[in-house]
Length: 305
Ligand SMILES: C[S@@+](CC[C@H](N)C(=O)[O-])C[C@H]1O[C@@H](n2cnc3c(N)ncnc32)[C@H](O)[C@@H]1O
Image (cartoon, rainbow, N blue to C red; front, top):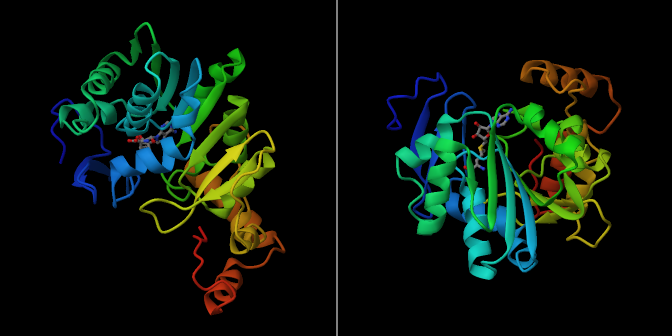
């Protein structure tokens, strides 16, 4: 268990070392690890920062990043280290959303952040306590609360991200952050030439993104069994979805999660989707899965979640 006497929340966090030697937490509340178990740092760098093209974007004079589900802060940390390496003069603005302030606090208290550069460690420590960090080149705010609410003022102000690192727990565990409505809100905060990166390739996630008008691309997930997803508002060419992935979007798995008021419970969101799935005439996902297991797409792999 983590070392923090002040932490009395019921969602206990268990510490675990991942494949690349970096540590992550397991959340008993969500029944899931915070990162891919093959490597937490690698996950942040490859499946978020590199996938969102931050090494290239950081060459610009300014860069704005939205970190959806800050957690231990690894995605923000990987972005900061990368920007520092590529262009230390870049004017960086980061807005990070996290519901549980104890998570970043515990990451710092348990010294899980020691692989990042000393400058980035100072920033993560400050964020864990003060929830903001300012310097001549950095303007970072950690907004504590339900992302469905904390994102709304940013959208209203017209705040625009060049890169969105979208990292909630999986859709079955945290459906409230994978709904059409939350993606619509998130897309409002994505610049026209911006890019969103997420680890999920679930059909319900991709169809929700497509319904908000985002253009989808597929990337091999580093250390993951399934592809990751990138999305843009503009129609630039992105690595295309395979035939198997495209057919997945025509099955019942592609019925998206809905949350019209942006405050429904996870249970209500899941129950509503199940009802829609039962009533729809789309191909059952099991038929799609068996078709691809039989050989048309042998070698290809996609989660049917
Ligand atoms: C998969 S972890 C994120 C890992 C993180 N990106 C990192 O690098 O450590 C998901 C995070 O989402 C947070 N979370 C869960 N529900 C949320 C909500 N409704 N709004 C904001 N954050 C939420 C959890 O507390 C957890 O820290």
